[in-house]
Image (tube, rainbow, N blue to C red; front, side, top):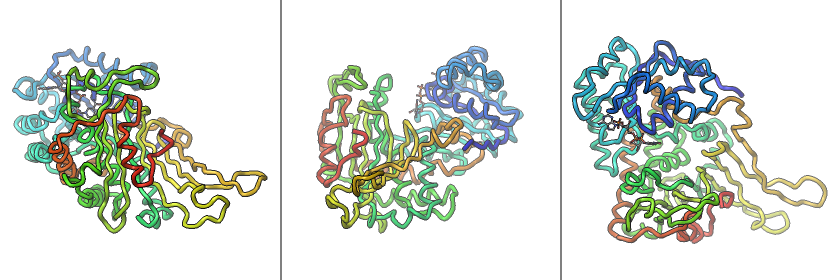
Amino acid sequence: MVSRIISVEAFDLVVFGGTGDLAHRKLFPALFQRDSDGQFTEPTRIISVARREMSEEKFRESVAVSLRAFVGKDVTASPAFKRFLERIQHVSVDVTGEKGWRELAEKLAGGEERVRAFYLATSPELFGPIAEQLAKHHLVTPKARIIVEKPIGHDGASAAKINDAIGAVFKEPQIFRIDHYLGKETVQNLMALRFANALFEPVWNSAHIDHVQITVAETIGVEKRAEYYDASGALRDMVQNHMLQLLCLVAMEPPSAFAADALRDEKLKVLKALVPITDANASSLTVRGQYRAGAVDGEAVPGYLEELGKKASNTETFVAIKAGVANWRFAGVPFYLRTGKRLPQRVSDIEVAFRPVPHAIFDGGTNTIPANRLVIRLQPDEGIKLWLMIKEPGPGGMRLQHVPLDMSFAEAFTGHVPEAYERLVMDVIRGNQSLFMRRDEVEAAWRWIDPILEAWSRAGEAPRPYIAGTWGPAASIALVERDGRTWNEDLA
Ligand code: NAP
């Protein structure tokens, strides 16, 4: 299998926060990959915006350093390297004031007929002011689009405020709310698997699915982002966006078409069907944790409070939740979610655990026959495994073996597996919103999250400690084991 490149029309991409971490670690490398695959049409331009004064030459040098670091050292040998750097310009603008907007308008002049995309790789407090300034300086053309990064707010009210500010300038079809998990190949493959195969749909319900687990585990701590993280925590940082989006893709009904609104309508229905978690059940359905000093990958690491440089903090770096989807298809099927920092392994996966066989005809009874499982691995090694029972080959009687039907993309796909941002930015240029969140989705997700945050705050309990390098507090294991189940043992 090799990739097929469909070129996009010429565009101007303005990256607000062009000197920042996201732009250099993710965006410029992703754009470079698309350019080197020949996807861009001339004359495509990329304009960085940030307060820092930098000559065009210096800025291009800084992008070259990032490309070497995040694409590969041999990137300079690529014929696209020079061409890509020449597309890039930099303007110093303080988006909260008047400085630099005229220069930006001058740079964009002449491109009014082209797709004009504004990527806001800045903190969310600047989203409203940027939208306002763009309108004030007449930079919003008919083909303009705006791309916003998570976090969209820290609760429902602040999310609505940000959405109002952007919505005052851009119409909903021009707004692209990125959740980069949706750009991952495996996540899109989950939709292909569910809706392009007749095999799964008849068993995709509570009669056949025992439970679903979603794990997003990181080995890193909070490092340089400690201050930001302390105001956020795992629930806001991971569950409100990425994990609920994954849950939606597992639980949603088949949309009538692979089209943005059809997909998003179905995801919204799932978000609305989530069983509320409130003061009455938060302590039995959720577990919060915070890491203490320990060791990850054989290396000693400090605890959260040491990294943060504070004596105390009530912020969770780990959360486990037993969620439920109250609809005809999934009533009674637990969706166990867990995410955390300083866990033993960097891994994100979704496991759909099917019910065991109803009756055993082989020696040993049903207990010796593990149930089928579908494991969708998002990172690090993207792929899908369907765990089945087969007969162990050769003589020796009817001995059974549990084996995965392995669809690892690295082996099936000979080209470069595109990073989520590559796909998503090209979708923005094409105007395809299928893999982006609509306003009502973001707000419905907050409507489920807000009561959990409120219940935790009212309970006033400190997060449970866990040693860095373990799978979180013991209470997380108990959350699942109470129901007679276990977390995916392949990860343990
Ligand atoms: P960052 O490294 O702090 O970058 C922030 C950028 O905003 C810098 O380029 C900064 O440049 C610019 N900026 C700040 N104030 C400005 C102003 N008044 N006018 C113009 N430019 C201004 O942050 P980041 O890590 O790239 O994150 C950006 C956003 O993406 C955040 O909301 C973050 O939560 C989100 N995000 C980041 C990642 C990631 O991997 N980094 C992943 C997902 C989401 P100057 O200082 O030169 O002005």
